[in-house]
Image (tube, rainbow, N blue to C red):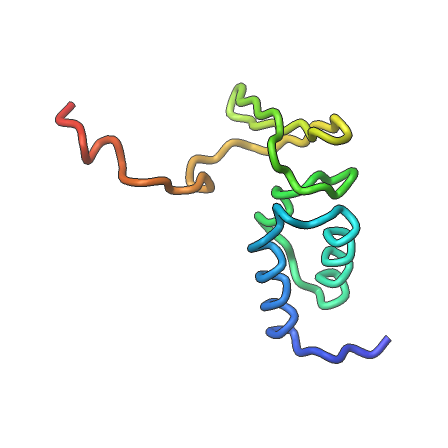
Length: 103
């Protein structure tokens, strides 16, 4: 199989795909994962946006945090995926509470 795109162009396509992942089907996620593998592009944190078994994007997963571990349960296949809980990887929403409070 001949590759027709450069690695940077492939990276841009993958970024665009994961920007709109909530609207995708599991077959599309599986294809983009194979596409990334064919260009030796690591998904990194993006792999946490879909189920590792059925490849459905996490839309409304069951989330549990216990003992510095986070576990997500897929709403389609009930598979549990777990990762080490790290605050630096949490999304930043709004301002910090410490900035608003004089505690």
